[in-house]
Image (tube, rainbow, N blue to C red; front, side):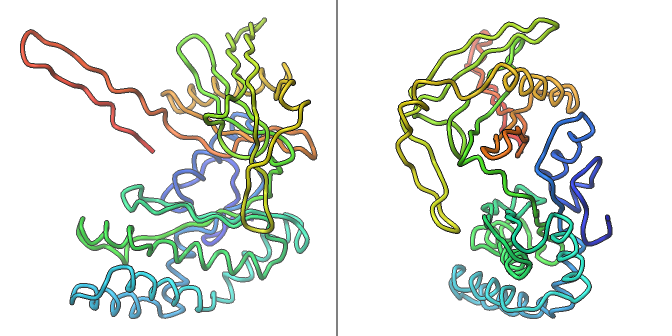
Length: 323
């Protein structure tokens, strides 16, 4: 059930309508890669909301106040408040609720996230977890729309040359992956092998010594495993937050991933690099209830800075980060 307002994350999708992150995820379903079931509320839906709720005059008025000297933080907060208080158009409400019903409806846990189109806006990701009702999903969509007007995003657009009317914020609604009960990490290609980092619980492995796996893909893949200490893991705390807790002795002494998991993730990495024709980094999560692996984000690899010396003055070639 795709429309101008709601697009399911399967197959090809327009990044100008669903956001860059969503478009990449949807594309990789063509490669047989598993992503959490869900849909995007499109940029067209955002513009319809702004138009029907008559938010454009509010935005323009607050921006005039900013240009006349009012504090940027105050102006941005006033715009976001107007978004949160406005009602979604009835047709958009119906389509979002129909999409949520297709995921299971009331009682089904979903995550709702902002999905920026323009990385230059520098919009911080807005995420709402463990939502279990249609009313909560609708409220989270309004707040994600409003995140387009964070103080940083407004300031960036003003600096580049204001185009606030053309800006838009798609929203993602997906089933929750209970990585807090399972595991999560990253995977990326490294020339002739694939490197996987894995830890218990939520989030990317960081300084807390995750497991590391090196895989040389092929008909008979060779896997090298390094067991990390994994002293803590991040789990959900209440409806919105997270907290770090100690891992159990069994979790510290065991490996996070099975050989089948490792081979599946390595295959995803190879497929993503081939599909996008450049090195990619994948963020994955394993649901502790069903045991399935899911791809939750795909991003371009940030290459390291390379220093080149050429007969005279030092020249530095910097590979700019890409989104």
